[in-house]
Structures are given as structure tokens and as C-alpha cells.
Length: 454
Image 1: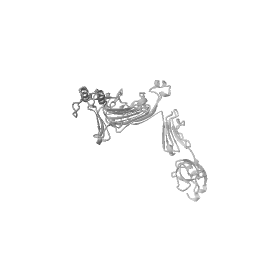
Image 2 (image 1 turned 90 degrees about the vertical axis):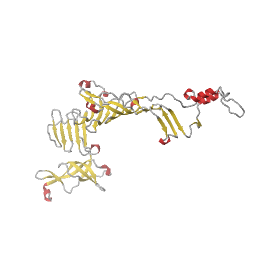
Image 3 (image 1 turned 180 degrees about the horizontal axis):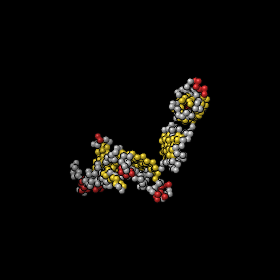
Image 4 (image 1 turned 120 degrees about the horizontal axis):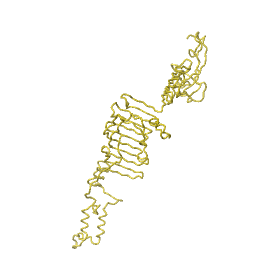
């Protein structure tokens, strides 16, 4: 526009809305993107300065919504705003909070255009779409369900997407009617109208967040999570809409990889506060017309942590459903008592290279072997069995029988039978020796829990 063209235009200051994109280094100038003005959104940021100095640079920062005073040219043959006035400064008046357009109902005539938005609304129920000049898009159902897209802003409000609904679901659909990969975050008010009217307590309204995501379209590999009310999705069971309390678990995570399943549960009271287990999947979940059947599982590994600090660990499970036999268990109760069980040989040593020098081996068939090349001591003294001391004490007056001066002194005939018996038997039967031959250990470690699909 030539200089002469400005004769028919009048400079008019207007307050516009924008957001700070950056600050020019070593200056008091900010770049501001204008999204609301008499001539609409600006294509590029403009340079602005503070109309006064409120303090330091931290008063205005990147991402702030600001009101800006800009001088426009008004007039011409069409008597309207055409452009910004050349040679004029732009001033930041201050920051403000941009309001969110998240109304549950949008009560306006169909396709009405107001000063700042376009609306397409159904008059009977209030459902429709609202698009304003700031770039906010709101989709409402006419009730308490609406969806908002909001540009600009800062923090968690910048370029945000918000959904409000009692039950929110996302579904990756490829195999109707099940749609296995899906997400649900919802409030459960009942399976039908009769169930809903019977709920009078706040505790009757269950809330949960659950996801079921497959690794591929093959249903053998997947992950399922559930938070809040215990209503997990697993396999073919994830199309269920009812929620029935079966546990107090507030978090669970299930990973199915082929024929192995890892399950983590948290929130159960008392001794089952945290439960982690690995199972063999003998039979996967099977969808049938009347509903679905749970998987048949056999446990291989299990950890239970109680909210009182108790601890149980089962390992080396046979993986046979409902038998629940394990090869190992370690348990610590709330009083700090420790129990260690293993159906096989137990070895204690410093390392694999030290088994022949310092070790204790508990063998269920052959008893206990103690290797101590440098000796076994109790309170600093070597060990002798009490039965030997008892024999000495019993026969102290007739322990030896003199034969001739300087000759051998054998055990007295009265003491000799007990001595021979003590040598030939082991400690449990009153003998001198700690070795012997008895019944082998049973090695039966039984878990009373029954493992089913959750």
C-alpha cells in the first residue's frame, strides 16, 4: 500500500488475544502469535513490548496467553479494518487465562453464526458441534458427554484434547463382534434399570480403568491391565459389560506370551496384598455363544506379600492345574520367623568352588553333609556328641580293666556293650555318631490356592 493510500484510513487501537512464542535474547521484546483480532489470526508472530515494567523477565514467559494493544487501519471504500498501522508499536497489556469451551449442552439454533463461533445444534436435545474463532472445537451429545479440542495454551492445556463421559471406550475394531483390542474408563451404575435403582450407596458404584492390547492379531500374545474396581479383561472374556466383585484387588496386570502367563495383583487385604505368579496356560480362554470360559492354568512360580510384611515365595511348580505342587518355598511371617523348604538337595556355601572346603548340604535321601576343612566349633570349641559324654560319665568308675604293668588297658567288660552300641547307632537313637540310615525326606510342598483364569 502506497503512502497516499493511507489518507482514507484512520489508525484505531484494538485489544487482541495471543500467546507468547518466545523472547528475543538480551532485549525486552517478545514474539506473540495473535489468534484473535479484527482481521483474524495472524500468519506470523509479531514483536511486542510491555506497556509498563511490572518487574523482571519472569512476569511474561513462553506459552502465556496475553492481551496485546495493536493499532489497525480502519476505513477505505469498504469501511473496515484492513491491516496494522505501519510504524506503530505493539504493547503487551498483561496475561489472562483463556476459557475452555467445555459446556455440556450447546443451546443455540441450528447452524447459527455468532461473533466468535459457528454452531451446528439439534434444538430438541442440544447435541451438536461448536467451533469458535480461537480454534476450540466442542462436540456435545446434549447430555453430560462432550469432547473438546483446544489449541495453544501452555502446560497440560497446550494443544489438549479432553473428553467427559460416564463410560469412555476406545476400540480397535477388526473382528466383530468381539473387538479384542480395546480400552475402557468408566463408572458402572448397573447392568439394567432394575439393577440401577437398587444402588443407593456410594460404594455400589464401581469405577475402573482397563485395557486389553494384543501384540498382533494373534490372540496368544497380549497384555491386560485393570485399575480401580477389579474387572479385568483377558482373552475372549474382554467383551463382558457386567462387573461383579470377586476380589478387593485395585490393580492387576496380566501378560500372556504363548503358553506362559504372568499375573500381578495388588490391593488384596491381609496376606495377599501383592500377588505375582507365572502359570502354564493349558487351555486358553474360549469364547462360546453363551459367554466365555476361563483359561485352565498350572502354576510354576508365585510370590505373595502381605500388608503386614509377611512373605511367601513358591517356585519350581509342576505346572499341573489344581495340583499346586512346588519344589521350593520360602516364607517369612509377620513375627519375622523364616522357613525355607525344598524338595531337592539344599546347598549352602560361599561359592561353587568352595563346596569341598566349607559347605552344608541337605540331601533328602542321604541326610546332611557338613564340610569344614578348618573345623567346626561351637563357642570356639570343637564339637563332640552328648551321648559320648553320657557313656563316659556312666562308666567312669569302671571304664578300664588293668591287665599288667605297662600293658594295654582295654575297656571294662561292663562298659564295653554300651560303647559298641553307641558306635553302631546314630544320635537320634542315642548313639555317638551323627550318621545313619533313615527314611528319606518326603519333599512335598503344597500350595492350598487354586489357580484359575482371573
